[in-house]
Amino acid sequence: MTSVERISNEIERLETQHEEALIQLKNAERELEELNEYRIELAPAAFTGDEVADKNLMVLEGEASKLSRGARLARNAAKEFERLIEEARKRRAQERQHLARERFDELAAERYELGIEVEEAMSALLGTLESYEAIHSEQVACAQDFGGYSPATKPPHTLIQEWLVSRLKEYLGLSSIDHYYDNPLFEVDDLAAKREDEGR
Image (cartoon, rainbow, N blue to C red; front, side, top):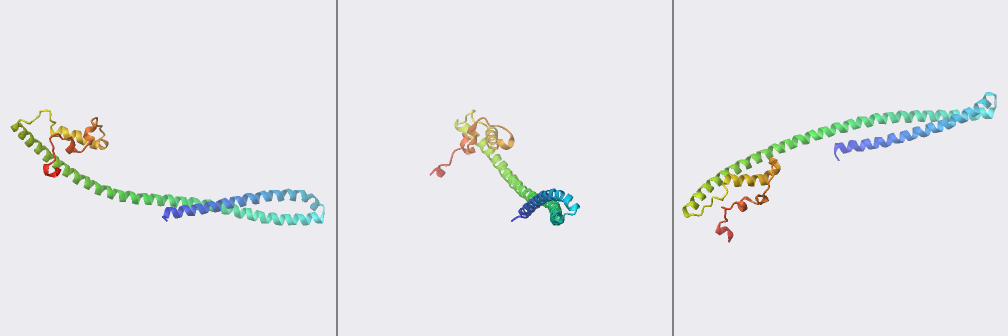
């Protein structure tokens, strides 16, 4: 159980106790109100010397005193529970902030490591693309020698640009019209062919 969950359980318990205190307070106030009506009714008779009324009034006053004390305790308890709930909510908010900060720092470190991986991958990609361009130039020269060069063949920059846009459009904020370039580079490159010994 996490610290936030523990504090949340504490708040739930305090809220239940607060609710119970409010119910007790409400019941005590209602009973006091009823007792006061009886006390008012008995007051004239007790005042004029009616012993039975006077005894009943004394009993009612004793009960009223107990109820008043109970109401006072319930009221004070409810206020204290409110204070404790507010204090626990503040602690929970602080704990959430603390945990969020810790997780933020962990993610920042992970992001940094991923940034290194991306940079390494980008360096490897750029190096490979330079080799791609060199091969293209040599391949075109060979094709011209045996008459197999087609001017319609896309230069490597255009081919790679369209392929990269198609593959990275989400990150570049660009849109690719031709979904043909969603395929792997070796499939969209007209001058690429699998080695014969790889096909076996």
